[in-house]
Length: 386
Ligand code: PLP
Image (cartoon, rainbow, N blue to C red; front, side):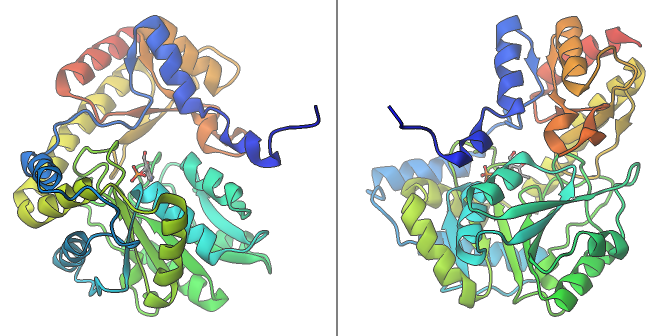
């Protein structure tokens, strides 16, 4: 037989995150490796979906999503950021932020186009680029502030550069890009005529008074920014698969056609549940979310410091990278395994977020866990004391 897997199959191997989850299950440990929030789904969101199902909203929706949801997204965007969005033509509801980025890449990139990605990166961004024939070009963020300069952006530039991905608040670093930093990226993108693809899925997970600023709002950026987000994290509905793209109508139509091709539509009744949540949940919900997660962040950062694994305190999102150079092991995978075997807490080796060895002294913990589970994990980590 001469049949074989496609060349791109190597890029969809089990991710390190899934591997650690499997290993964690095997030893009956506490899984702080995967970004799955086990906090409660707001009641109105559940009721909205249930009622939609009962009322017969169970068939395919329009390729760009139900009107109720597109309108609710436009209203929410206006309410939180001041951004004016036309729900008829500038929003595509997709299968999570993941589907939204995939369709964006299919619609706007040609094979061989290069896309600048900040490192440490979120692995799916890289796999999505590669799966669609684009080429990631890595741009390191410098510790301890996860800093970058215009010069480092220019170093990553080639005649084939077509876009930059900006994930703010970021997974795994927890960096919240400041308006000044986004202005550096915007000036660069405008001067080089690049698209900016954002991933703003953690837009409501902000600590210490940080503000989320959507890059599309900067002067000259509206037409070249593809704003991507979703509700997986905000409403703890990672399994529902509801996300979206906001962009200029010039791009939206084709992104929508690819969305139709790959997913047809996001689940109809679940779109209704999300629309209801966006409409009915007030400021207090979002503020409560940030407050609740700040307590979790402080809890795990305190435990990591006590255990001798210095955390890089996240400004947003719900992950923390910790310096594990004092743990035994040749590389970050050994160190994460040592941690799992000796504390029963699963983390993700830093190598999952870098294309080179820069991540070998880091591991990532996800703190989107119910308090009793997180408390237990912290107690176990503190016992380590290295
Ligand atoms: N983007 C980032 C940065 C993430 O960390 C995750 C999940 O971990 C996603 C996107 C996935 O979003 P969705 O569930 O909307 O596809």
